[in-house]
Amino acid sequence: MSVDDEQGDLTALVEGAAALGVTLDDAQVAAFARYRDLLLDWNARINLTAITDPAEVLTRHFLDSLTCLLAVPPERRQQPLRLLDVGSGAGFPGLPLAIACPRRRVTLLEATGKKVRFLETVITALGLVNAHAIHGRAEEVAHQPGQRGRYDLVTARAVASLPTLLEYCAPFAHTGGHILMPKKGDLAQELAAGERAAKLLGARLLMPVPVTLPLLDDGRVIVVARQQRPCPAQYPRPAGAPAKRPLG
Ligand code: SAM
Image (cartoon, rainbow, N blue to C red; front, top):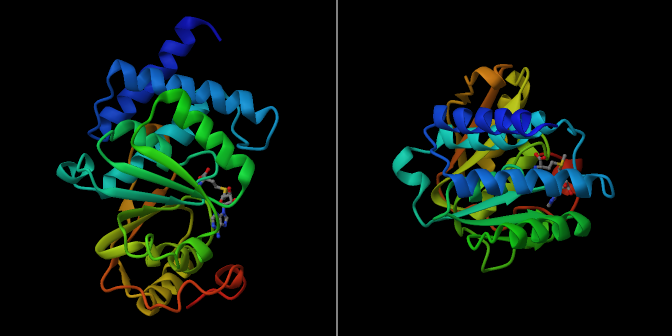
């Protein structure tokens, strides 16, 4: 790719972020460029993403991650509050959110050790002092006292269907906190099952937020749940159960 092409790509990211109300400075743009380099480099050795076109990494991973901010009022985006990304994989959406919102404290939870090592490498290479990675399964980490009810925002992208996702995420959210789940496609059945699961978990589904960016105009939404009361202690059930026997 020529320097001009690369600049064009980065401009698309900067403009897309601006449409979301996020101003990226030069250091943040450089951090995204370095993150993309590391992602494509590591992807040759471990399976991190099926998206290998550099321009698509910017839109379908970085910008798509930032669309979670559509569900967060601008005045709350830069508050020094805690965000947890469950099943972060190669860092989506948690790491782009950590780059764009440097005052937020971002925890990335991931079950696969190799991916956690990638996340730690990116965090170190980018000097991201507001992010760290945890190796573990949501079903186990959510029962640790220091983790339960600790976060005002919990995100999860492409990890599971809504009832399973809610069981992974709700125990981490404090009362009044929100769970943000990017989704696309026909969600009618999933939303109905998600609503039933949310009730059992002390949460409530709100109106999904549509993503209307020109570069991501394919029916994406952010499904949002609000934690109404502390999640009952029996959730999440033991490892594997939320996926095998979803609530709702
Ligand atoms: N969120 C990333 C994204 O959007 O690109 C990764 C999606 S990948 C399809 C799902 C990831 O969730 C995998 O890396 C997997 O290891 C992780 N995962 C699945 N179940 C999990 C669980 N119960 N606890 C923690 N991580 C989990």
